Image 1 (cartoon, rainbow, N blue to C red):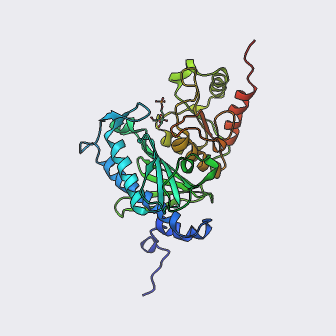
Image 2: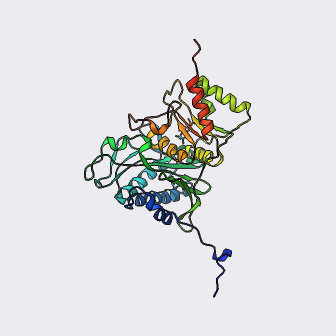
Image 3: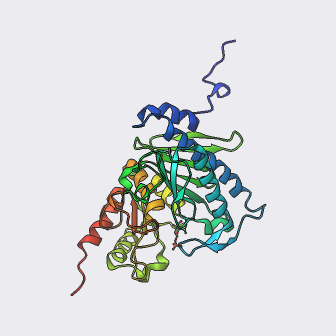
Length: 339
Ligand code: P6P
């Protein structure tokens, strides 16, 4: 029978994440398949966490877990569940010798001394939004280890500047669940089809719009912002930009990536390093946005250039459309304290 494959009946279901990774593998500097397997492990954990999130209202996984993380933040039950799922998936995959997680004070030794990679992860960012059904996300960075294979992970393995990342990505658990990642060869978005249990390529070679008119910041902190940031926000309003702030970093970043714009989490007098964490929040999104043609800075330097000094350090964070990020950096660097 002559099937008309152009018809909807014969339309292919699209490229799965697994097939895409395999096809792109030849672009990995180390085409040994280990980084491919690591990405598959993250996607698997993401599917499991997605299922837990989608059932959150039905089973007892919402609300506080009853303990705090090193940040002093109340851990949500799903925070703990997500942390366990990602650590377990990465440990079982065997490619990772160590992990740092927002939910753990110290480096996690996976007990896999032959793993070539280390992972920095925020297993469930924005989890305070779970109970109100707002989109939340997972953020991850992958580095090659510096210490010799066959030994246990060392602090230097995870304390690398963001420019050393070999892969980075995020999962967004929203109206649809997406996985967006880069290995340094462009940014690619996959949409999860739960009925098939697969991520399908939906947004190949993503690029951030080079013009933007959306600014995203928690203006509740306005009184604590520096003068150049206050001036920039006035500029945005005078130009009738749109204000959008979900209060969930992955969702706010994802919108900026799609629509253009800038996300700001500035330093303040009370929080001189800002709120967001360099190693498992800012570095990954900075790698992605630069691969998509955007920029990310702490106001003084590229996020990816920052040499980490502690596992859970924070940094001021300005990320999005290049011209908008440049505008903020220029204002910060040219601001002269009144004498
Ligand atoms: P604020 C969530 O806790 C988070 O780390 C990010 O997801 C989010 O962008 C930010 O904090 C929100 O912080 O101070 O505006 O509530």
